[in-house]
Length: 207
Length: 207
DNA sequence: TCATGGAATCGACACTACGTCGAAAAACTC
DNA sequence: GAGTTTTTCGACGTAGTGTCGATTCCATGA
Image (cartoon, rainbow over all chains, first blue to last red; front, top):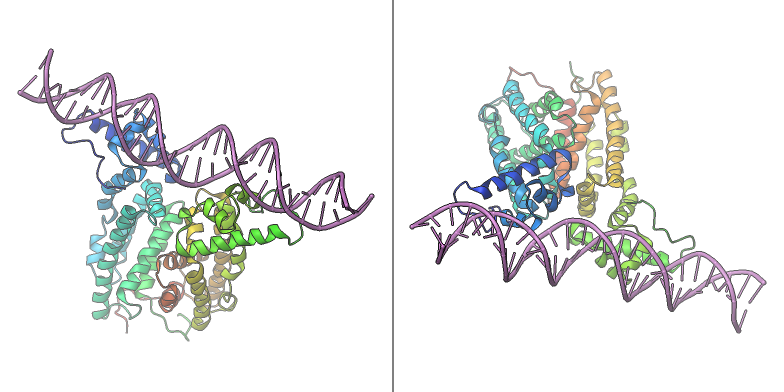
């Protein structure tokens, strides 16, 4: 349940430190092969060459391991999205760079992220992590939408925060579903731009 | 694991039939209060006034109960979407009716659907259910997209199936996230229409 | 009316996974 | 090399799942 390492461990990169990293590494390896729910504490412990009860010296639970892995990931998740989120107008290239970075992360760590998302309802620390991530993205994207609308660059529409939330939902769901996230980037670029800038006149066919 | 009722039960709407319905009813009730993962077989059995081991006479597992509930729901899920999916062009009213029906279902049975979706990876029968549902929607929507494009009613863009998949993903994610699905309908209508029909000229500000 | 067989019920058991505790071994510190 | 801190583990208790065989219920038709 807790985010921090177990009750033991003070300081100094000693033996136990290697063990802790071994557990994390084992978790990462196993997650590449099967979903979080199928991984047992026995396996995690065995992978680090310690007994099951020793595992609890390092982490409070399976979820605590996931949280630790996620912690190292959080920075990466917003990587390369600065230019897009701070920019303005339908800057296709910037959006593509942002989505590409995200897709790579999903390819490499999809099981971890998906596992965390699946376990989030019913596990406060994971729910917070997800909520924080979403909020950060929605916040910045909503601001961008407001700016664009004020500048006449984007059509009016759903409240900025709502629209931004839908964009975030779409990304997450699409990447979670996709077998090959990177293959989806181009289409996501198109679709997100349409969500934000796509205006259309109902009666007339598109030229 | 299995979809069908347990190994017992032959014919005739007798005592056991009432029990079976009592279990389903109990599940429905409990799902209104807490997520699927927090519901135990003990509770389901207790709700139907039988012992835990008697439960297994009726269903193979907790998941089998969910599958049974879902079975009754599958028809509803596509309800009122006919006019939209069989129609053509940006028929806002038809889309709104379709989405409204879906939103109502999510409000009433959100926990059930969300629980099923969460348990789907790692549980073949649920995964199949989800895949079938998605496929059915994607299939029809993709056909609609192709028709519209051929008729010059919609701009070119992502492959119809991919685009339809993204629309489906968005709906599911949005409703799963939302506290009040029905409040989202109007915005979803706008966004989906933009995804399908929204064209925009990059350099020029919107008139 | 009662025997027979399927429907329904349950207690006892076996299993898996989780998490805790306290005692011991290892490693480090002075 | 005594004392402290870190690390390890076996034993235990708990919760939930699923199975088995014995038993009871009950409709039916001989």
